[in-house]
View 1 (cartoon, helix red, strand yellow):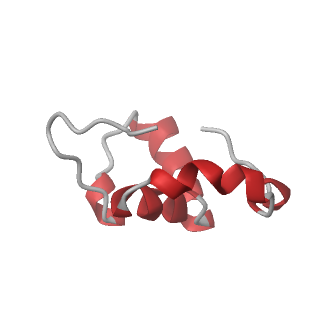
View 2: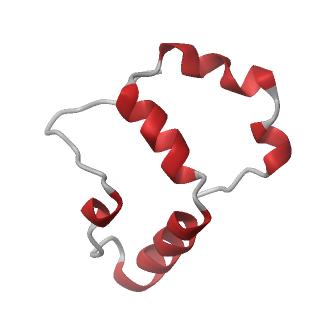
Length: 69
């Protein structure tokens, strides 16, 4: 997972793709920038290979859900 710095976040062009994103997509954008979540994800990925529960962060995936771009 790459972490983009604040300079990227303040670039208006970087947000253009968000015009078509649904509520879940907006929530994911918010969550992926949360420093606590970034630390949790890095630790969970390193130590458990995904065994930690993403639902602890409010992530719930529907079967067959696809990322819209």
